[in-house]
Length: 313
Image (cartoon, rainbow, N blue to C red; front, top):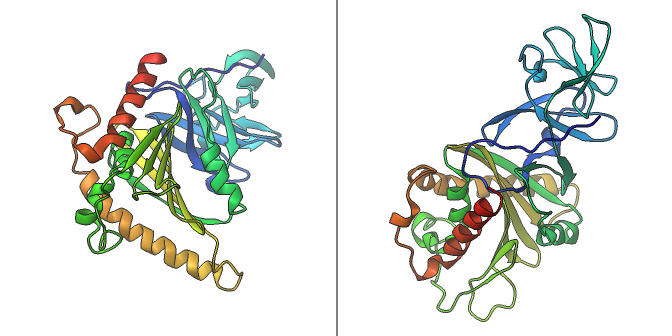
């Protein structure tokens, strides 16, 4: 019988569906090991779906990611125990039969927008990711991307993208060169998003935070960026940057422009990284920080994050 358990690691994460890995990073015919939420995971494909499990054989705790995928099963490298996608043991060599009650922990997962998503905790439902879907679909899934690991807690990474006032200082040699402080920014909040209208009188959002770990930058109708903030541990996160572009997409030139755009975004992200990694650790007393007028999106985010922790604790 299939057993699905909730994913729970150290304190600090609210429940929800988190994007954790780009589908292209998953090998076709062997297991993939990674750490998310401080938990060692193994991700693999059977013939019909992507499977996310604890990277531990329940027999003697060997890493399943060191094993093989055989006939839609994952095989332990230590003694050859085999487990199906529902986590149950289908073959124990010692007895030459299945032991259905010997289970690997399996976590609910899905693939959408070319990302693998996993359920953390006990969410009451699936949050609205339509803003992400709208961007993806409007560009027909045409994008370039890269990822970078930061020595920083996930909320610090997210708050950095909600903080537009740092542009003039941190990015004064790049995107903040001509930054003008908005006079009347507007902020809207839904059950699963925080929307910022940075430019005065603008009818289109400047940024949209999508709960729990996604963010959209609206540069123009022809260019948008999606960022995913993936929690590795208490002190590490991976940031994925997707650039969606509606110009210079012809086959001969697209790879060149993609390369140039990624290099530019890496330079900008590196400017952020140095400062964000200098901030206090994940368990810093945030009430000791003094938020300003333009930090409203950060205040809304912290309230949303905290309320979800309380709701699903």
